Length: 68
Image 1 (cartoon, rainbow, N blue to C red):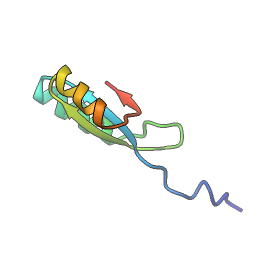
Image 2: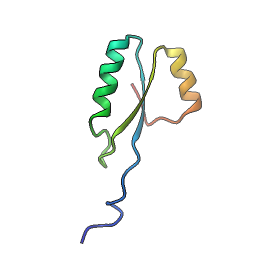
Image 3: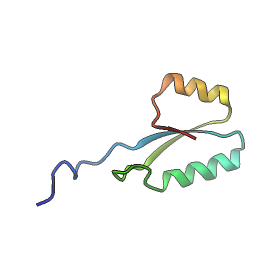
């Protein structure tokens, strides 16, 4: 019998991507969003900041699991 806890969907991992090149940011965000990023099979929820300053503002307002 399967463990009922394992059947509960895992919350996505919050990722902050800081990249000033728009094309590279879109490609990297799409790539991260398509694959599992956690050991439990969690997918990524990606926020993009186009500068270090805006990345710091996002970090101050939101908890992230990973910053790239």
